[in-house]
Amino acid sequence: MTIKTNRAILAMMLCCIAVLSFPVMAKDFIYIPCVNALEIIDCETDTVVESIPYNDYIVNSVFSPDKKRYYLNAFHSVYAIDTTTNKLIDTYKFSSELSRVTILGLGVSNDNSQLYLSCAIVKKKQNIPKLNVLPPQFVVYDIKTKKMVKNYQIPCSFTGVVPLRNDNDNVILVGLDIHKLNLKTGKLEKLMGMLNPEKGEEAKNGLVIWQNNYPGDHGLFANPYYTESGMGYFIVDKNTGKVSTLKGKDVWFEYSNVISPDKKYLYGVMDELVKIDMKTGETIKAIPVKKGTCYALTLTSDGKKIYVGPAGPDMSVYDTETLELIGTIPLAGDGVIAHLLPK
Amino acid sequence: MKKKKALKPVNKRAKKLEEKEVFGMSDDISTSMPIGCTTIFDTGWETNPRPETPMSNCLSSARDFTSCSGPCWWPAQTPDNITNFPDFQNQCRAIEKDWRNLNFVIKR
Image (cartoon, rainbow over all chains, first blue to last red; front, top):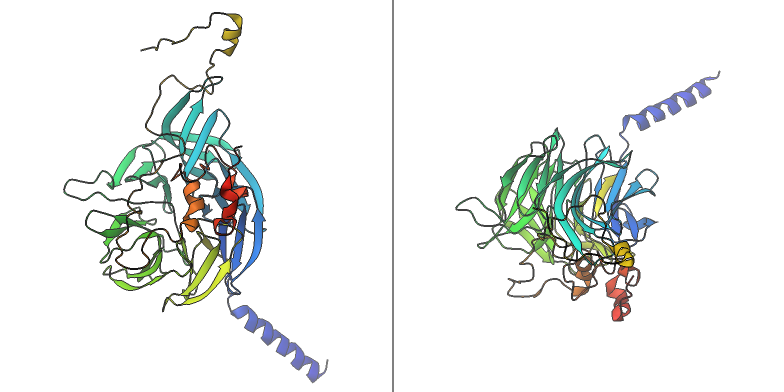
């Protein structure tokens, strides 16, 4: 072997070491369940790179904790998307002509094996125009066997199902009030009154549809609420199961929130994109969303871009620092939610 | 207490049509929650506190239309996507562009 060959081998080895010593940078993708198709945006190019068809309207969605599945709630059914192949792999049907199940909230167990569903159930009787409206149920559903494991009666209108990452025995339910549900006994423990506040407190009006996700997953789920005297944000810590509030200094009409990875800022959106200081509740900046009303918010892993939308068939991309519009991405249809998935 | 049946079948045909219990449901009727519509306590977003533009919620109304029909927020004004018009989105995938298709709603 010549010296020249040895040098070439050494150079190649150094190159390999250099490549392996740098961590593989994950690419950010945003999954947007639109009307009749799941659209996937590549955050590097800000374009739709994939569209997975189905025939439905999706009200909310959630990734499994291992991020291998993306579950879409179509009220009567749940669709499962394999996030590695980006294919629709299964449909879990919960409604029939005689038993109408409306899934209001959706969550996945920490071991990825069970769906947690907050359901409204109405049963029809054969041959006669009569309906039985049954008490709402919290259903634990085994994904593999496609069978209901257990169910508990719950108060109505729990649209937010928030599993706790360090507690497999309890799940937080958010709706007219915030409760902790014991999955072993079905016992409900009220954590925060909203429609039914504690004595001396104001009633809070909150619409809980969106559980926006965030890079790094600090485990804080924030949602706006409104009282007679102003607005605030309730924050559910998925690590501890504790619920706290942040009083807003100004009143902004917001559908949903996302907290920055460093937990310094809270963003909100409806007709405006709003940036709030998490320590003081003060508004740092607010701008009208050029495209109009939007529902959801998604941050990129580097924290530099925030994706606003959908509602109408588009996503608007803003700079998180300046809240300046970077661009708009057209979508195939209207939508409600968007979630980040770094790959 | 067991409820009395309001109607008793008197002939063979009527007996055949007699209501049957399905999926083990009881005769107890809870009226706390109607199917689909108005499932969520949500008032207030329609009131607009802003003194200047944008003056109303939502903007434009077309952007909020599909989602209002989904959970049945305005069942008189939008197709009831849960119960009566589950496939209305096939006519109007993006209301801003396809609103002309809303001239009529095809019932399933």
